[in-house]
Length: 196
Image 1 (cartoon, one colour):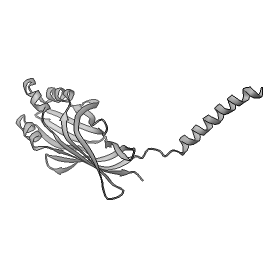
Image 2 (image 1 turned 90 degrees about the vertical axis):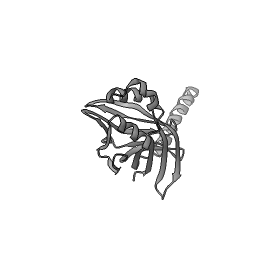
Image 3 (image 1 turned 180 degrees about the vertical axis):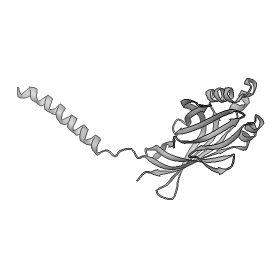
Image 4 (image 1 turned 45 degrees about the horizontal axis):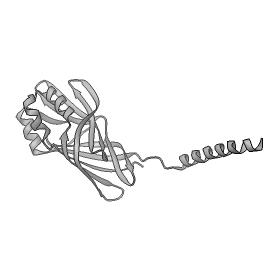
């Protein structure tokens, strides 16, 4: 009887120890701050050629009219001492307008290790969530004034699916889409800190 109790007691004690360790582990910090998306001159020239205007949407702010826009950061993560993800306010985005077609990109999620930017894509009121929008050529983090951290994502290239979906919505001829895929659309600069 006593020999049967020992393994059970060990299992119970191990489970209790794991539960205590999980309770003692610090919760992952929520990030707050601001991200600024700056379109490259090449991207703006291309959009202008097809008659597309770029404006802020929702809670986004305008830094430079038609070119740079700011978004509140409402979440994200720090992993291994470095920023691993940045998530912007779901109500903030940018709108691409051509004639009666209105395309809004919003709810941006930057995956730093995966060097990708995902977002929701709304075309004339119909939303496709979590669309892979951009691949990022590079990301780098540098210390800001404490407690701030600064993350730069440069070389934003539209993913093949984004080229097709935006091309279909905005009327970009298929023959021009390979050229659009080679355009560096700009950069995303984020200044974040752990929420209090």
